[in-house]
Amino acid sequence: MRRTPSIVSIDGTQRYVVQHARSPLEIKSYGPNIKRDGEIFRAARLIVSTSDWAARRQAALTLSYIEDPIAVPFLKRVLKEGEGTSIPDYAVDGLVRIATLESVNALVDAARTNTSLQSRIRAGLQIVELTTKDERVKAQIRAFER
Image (tube, rainbow, N blue to C red; front, top):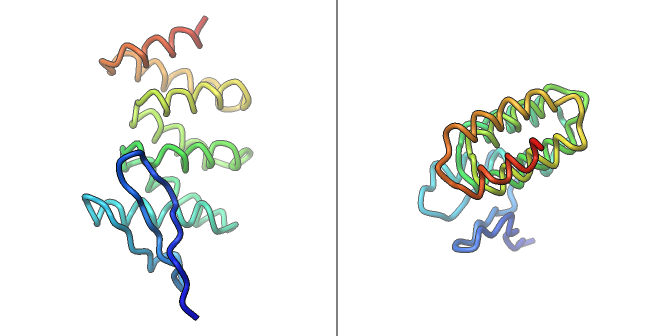
């Protein structure tokens, strides 16, 4: 039986496609940097498809070091679904490293709903505010801090 590819994410300029595979490690992707995209989608597939927390933790750790905005939706999912584990810590670190408006919004939303991560998120947002040049990001952080 032949299966069609699944679209995992569309970032506005590119289609990222994950082929159905026998295991999460057999993922193929299309994009400007196949090696990096392969890492992103291997990790994204694990976050979306497995209930094994060890695999999800490794996937979240991988995504936290990618520093690519395409990882934001998957890190947001980790923040929401990983409460009570150490996995959301990796998501916070990754979203801080990405430092876009979308990642800051994800951190702000998580800080409002997950009290156990609030201090870590606030510290991360301070780092973003000090290092970013994007005034929209700085304004969003200042609005949250009030």
